[in-house]
Length: 294
Image (tube, rainbow, N blue to C red; front, top):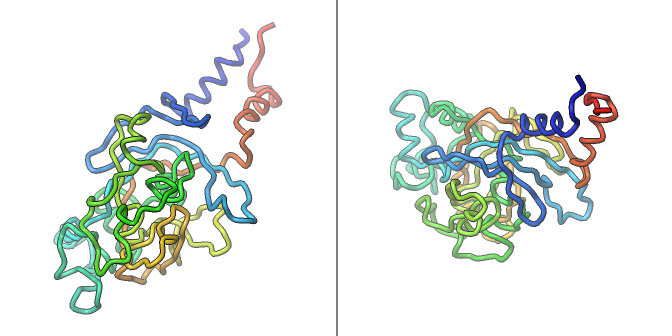
């Protein structure tokens, strides 16, 4: 019995997407999401990874599968619990280095002066992992390619930057996928907000830093990428959704912290042009995976 092209193609897409879809400016994304306490479930979607405004930018479209991301950066209070359990080592303390908060800081502020190794340890302790650079950028600039997590217009009140210390987590603007949260919620009503993707602490991601652009993603083993800028940032460009910095796996900084992700859903590199989704259908027909009724 011959199978219908549309039925099989649809089943293949559902197996990949497994969700309902919503469209914004002709871009379509998953709306079938569930919320984990303290985390936001980012919907499946695709976007152009990297700084598309660069003169020599090469199209680099990626599909990101659904994943969960901490709504806030990991706090000192949270990290102290891991230390008490014996699963995490102590970061550099406030008594040993200016700007570090361990030992003397407000437990509601993001933990800093941790190394990527310590960030890995903590996320494993709570049953999570570090986000990849592709996932982090998707959460920050989303489907609208915003320059800042809240949009394209700079607002110095929306982030903790150019400050004399870190800020309490969750005290700045709520965002989601490159939009103010209240706007994004119209498309994803069941997804919670993200906070401090710009400023407070630059966030460690599980991606090896590549100075000449980032066309692919590999797990961090030597020098990790940092995203988001920090309280020490002096210029607004460091708060942009595509700004990148780096840190060695055993290095620390008062400017650096992290947040965790959940679910083993690695992103898939599938597209280089805007027409590639249409091409998928052609590929299926060319290799005769799908029979057509006579």
